[in-house]
Image 1: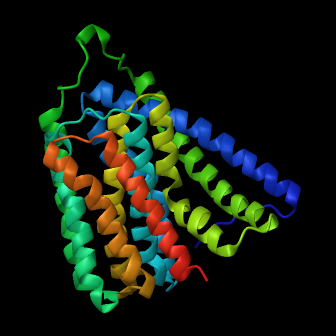
Image 2 (image 1 turned 135 degrees about the horizontal axis):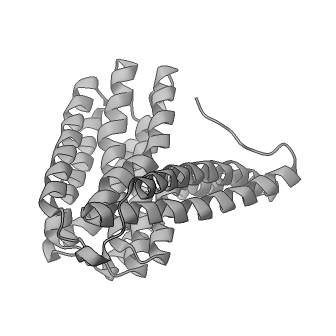
Length: 329
């Protein structure tokens, strides 16, 4: 099941595209503000909030689309969508976050989650060499997601209070304030998701009207489309100087894409998920290289640095170029 919000005439296409921009900008403001308040009020570090609550909210629409596709017997693109989203999240969105903001997180905050993400990609790389992801293999990948949840709960309990402000500076916590921020969080997430869909559908339509080749549209609007909620969250976080929230969202969303969505689709389908040739030959290896290029040096040095963002962005550009040259025809 997929929704399409493309306008019926050129005028409607432009108007809906503009409406998508408004939804995304306003939704991003509400979403990031509410997430920041949750972190400050609870005393849980923003990285953990970003990797869990924020990541689940930005990944939920993609998960629902994949699950409905599996129910309808159309889960053959699930692996490609998940891997493409992780690659764009790291090569484009984390690139922007690291280049534009100084990330002050320590290894103890992101180390385990980074290792779990690398384990998920390596598992997928190994399991799909035969052109499929079996149900049993999907369940093994799901174990990594269980580990991610357990580690997040332990980290939240251990770190709770380490980033609290002084008692007099903490945000006021009342029933009205809590309800207001929950509403802001939900409305912000909904605005991002709706705006992203409006931009994807009508942006692709505008590109077609302007004569942009299908291969270019596939490599940009369609390929990056599933990562648009994460992109909006990161751009808003950059503007509000919330680097931990941004990086946490990217890592958490990547883990959920690979270790939750794919096993769910495999279980619903009741058989192996097919992996297309492009996925085996290019997409999954590229995803592994780009993620490792950022995470391994960060684990080694104990922190994220700006040059890692430039490296990820450069590798992502190379990946897009190879995809257009080899599979864009």
